[in-house]
Image 1: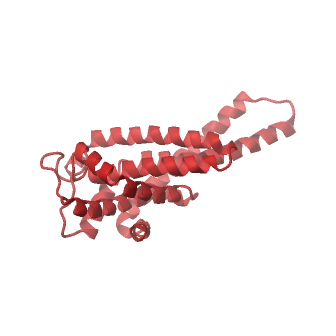
Image 2: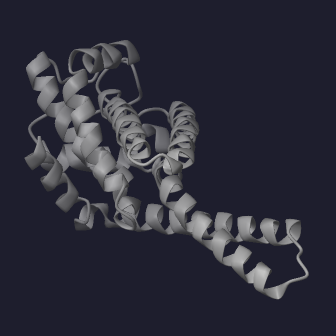
Length: 238
């Protein structure tokens, strides 16, 4: 599995994924900057001190807090931004890396938006809890990696699996191979924890989980899109 992860990370920067990577990273950085400016402006309006030195200290503390918060908010923000592009990434991987196997069916746009928003909300909650636990040495790291490992593994594997299976089949497969998917999620969480590098998380995680799903699909004995479950790949973008 480590080999698959390393190959997937290298492929993240390949030419065929460059357009999606640049769009998702650019939009994620832009959104984080806007959120940071808004937070700084709000704090400046709320705090008005007569001592100039005190205002400088508060500004520095606020800037540091915004930077720390941004690190924890990168996973949900990048997932939200990239969520609408990931079917394109998955299809590219399927066509280039598995040319002799069937191509999956794109998840309908409406369903994809619902999944993206749900995942964003859960990721924000988990990472805010981890942020609050910064004052408890060691515990916050455990919460961060375990929670993100579980969530990232579950959601990105489901994205890959739903291109070939119904939701019930995807859930059953995830249950049968839960430990392997969780370990894969931990590997994704490691990338999430590295500043700047974590901006490529959605693309890397999608490539990684598409490959993992194909391996698990072979073991499970079926890797054929469920008849009629979704429109043919790409039709929902017309």
